[in-house]
Image (cartoon, rainbow, N blue to C red; front, side):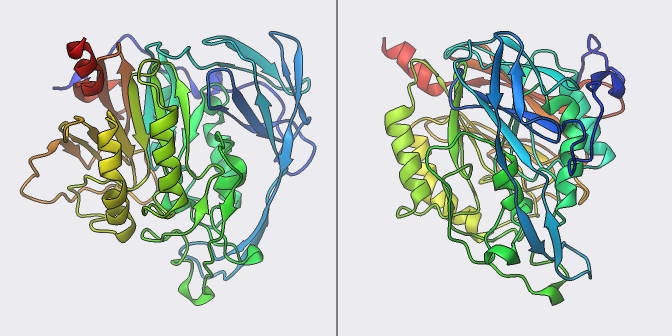
Length: 441
């Protein structure tokens, strides 16, 4: 059923932007590319930016936080070009890590005298809340329209992005333009990401290790230092088509490759579809330990997963890719045993929702319809699989989750026609784990 929400209006894009003077990120101009992320708990967060001062000021409590500063250089063949290897040097990327935050609190911050922003810290564990989901965003006009739709939702407090962010595709400058384009929302709404295949960017300068743009620009919660032993060398004669391969599996472990965080009633587990997941892998060992020792369903009744490659896919695109099949074979039983409630993926440029699957009643959602430059995935397999509840390959949009209480949540898929707020698909999701506990008591 399609429902129109007429109570929300779209602010002009300029009204959503901060006022400061801006630099190009490569000099001492004003701060830019500002974006926020949650830490592992409600008490922590990170504000990231380039340009301007190296210190973030929390106006609420008079604190100043010195930023960690990182940078990187790459030599890669951009996708679908004949340029050969192109060298890129990143700006100085600054991450101010904030601790001892109060839950659900509006924090105002400044970077020097020419940038003011704000964000709200994560809710206390167990608290119901609303969040947005998007995938395969890119930098097109459709991409920005999707972000504007998310920004118009005054109830949503964070974004889960299921991979394929900038579509830089080994052209490093496109990371800079991407963060400029999403800054009007990312500077106030925590933006939590996972690595997609378009984050796989081989780097000749470092021996072929991958995902430098992803590694250095996104300050996600880390449970151990980054360990990347991937060796993947490009061939200039391939015109960049060996950049961002869909079926590549590497050895990029820990750091922001896979991680978890707690926000309100949700424990979110973020995995990497493009590093090993077999039973002998670091990712498998970390996930098993996370589920066994750190997930507390009394405090966080909803267990949510996010990774790029969809395990349930009835689209003709990205069928039977090795890394997806091996990941599902290694991890699905483990996640089912621990009662994962919903899983968000991208990769396929369409929207698809499953019926509840297995004893855990997991709902799998493909949300790769953010608006990227590669276009729609509109060809679905027939007949429709019995597990499929809804699918659309012709519209761009985003998802919305309302965690109503410990046992019920509402899922919505919002399409992007014009400036309207349209719910094209919705469902009430039941938390089988919490319902079982309630019944048992």
